[in-house]
Length: 186
Image (cartoon, rainbow, N blue to C red; front, side):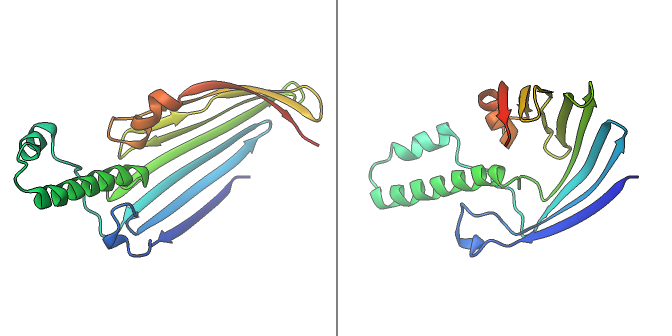
């Protein structure tokens, strides 16, 4: 028998209008289903986000524009204000990426499966996520072997990918990696 579930959450950061490092209010929602086919389990989800009061953050001026302004040393007070404004613009753009608010509406799908084999001592599993709005994705394949009732070993990977102006695009080269894990439970 399949299980279907849904949930929603509203987030409204305090004084977000005056803080370039704060997220904008948003509504996040999820609809998921899972089912066991014997020793094979599948979980599929749709995740969405709607950002209220959304506007695209473009970041700072480009280097050639900034270079001309910085070379004019006659207006130090204006230069300080301009640098402060540029820092806030860059901060707003990066934080929009970190808060996953680069579009007013986002559509994401996830799929997770696990297949238990060899009397449930061997596990093959993976989680895949794809953001249709930003074209980001992550996949996390993993193989587990239950050595004893208390000792399990895993070998897996986390692979991130996305355009340069997305969160996964920022971290893909740095955080995509394989791993080995030895887990003891008591």
